[in-house]
Image (cartoon, rainbow, N blue to C red; front, side, top):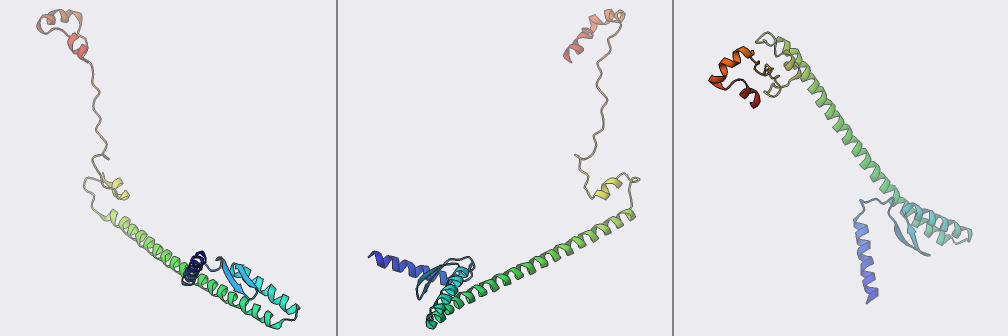
Length: 185
């Protein structure tokens, strides 16, 4: 029972890896079932291993095994070169899109600068109502709001002056004197 589960899991793993060819094949780890057992590693590592096995087979005068190892190495060489071509094509497409976006931004910037230059050129020709009091605001293209206007300065409040003592004797009976307003402040 346990062996069938592991077998079915490995099948689903193989199907998933075959369907995901657009992934990063260059760095993906593969399990290659070669004539002398499994070889595990990235495509470059597998290529090197099969080439080494092919050299060893040639040294032992086993031409069939050497050819077999070379075919395995060639398979992974083709996979690796195809993946590198796809990566290069994606990189070139990305660069092309980046160049197009940059050109569009440059065009928009040039148009904006041209509009600003025309607006600045047209501003001095516009009639100025009250002798140019708005000249500073028109160049900055800002709208004047009540918050941006300077507030008029008020005269500072002054305390009433104390009256001479001779007059204070006459006014005390009528209104209570000058002490009340000063105390209130």
